[in-house]
Length: 157
Image (tube, rainbow, N blue to C red; front, top):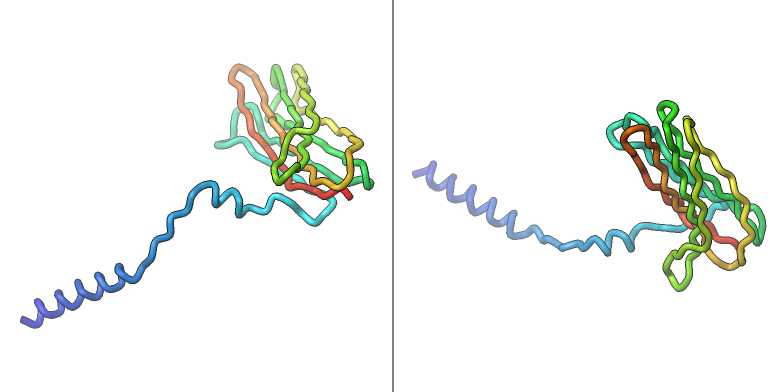
């Protein structure tokens, strides 16, 4: 009789605990909106490594730096593990307009039989906006491996 009573009390206790837990559904859009996409600093950088250590691509990096009240310096790096047949670097300078980042300018670069591809660009921009850099980095030597990067926005004022 005591065992049955303990078992019933245990079941009731578990039911009470489970009943007190509240579940709040979270949508992916809420997660994206909660991410801070800007910085108060004059510099931002993002690096992405090839998943599961790729055979060709090691990592990609993009960065943006406010140089003056109307000028930013941006850079992109695609780094390989060895010399690859083709190395790719696409750089997108994006400007925040009405709460959304849109492409302001973009560049595409390739290199043949290279271990890395590095580009530094200085751009004159209108002040009063946030700017960020998005990058596409890839290496092809038989198979093609790629990663994407995106910096936080830097205010140019």
